[in-house]
Image (cartoon, rainbow, N blue to C red; front, side, top):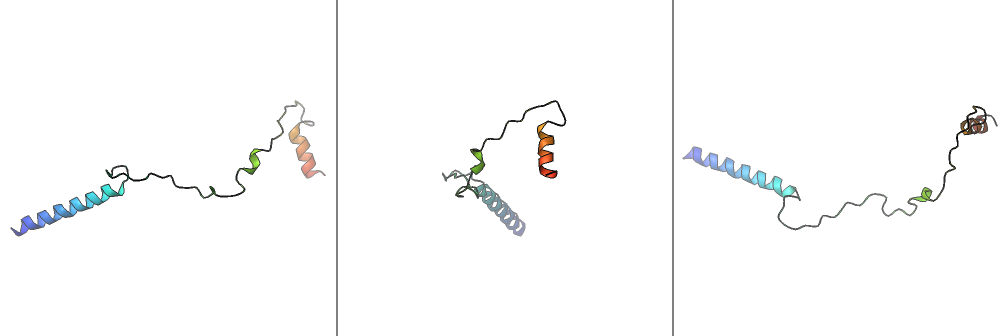
Length: 80
C-alpha cells in the first residue's frame, strides 16, 4: 500500500511539472493571449535613420593607378 502511494505521488508530481512546462509555451496554450512583438531599443529614438537621405557618390572605374578614386582619396588623406 505504501509503495502505491509513493508511485501515485511521483506520477502527480510528474504531471504537475509537465503541465507547468506546457503553460510556459504560449503556442501550446489553449487560452487566447496577445502575441505582441517586443519593441526594439531604438523604436522611440528621435534621430533614427538619419543617413538614409544622403546619396553616396557613385564609384567609377579608371584603369590608371595614379588617377583612380582610391589613389586620389589616399593622397588627399595622407599627403596633404
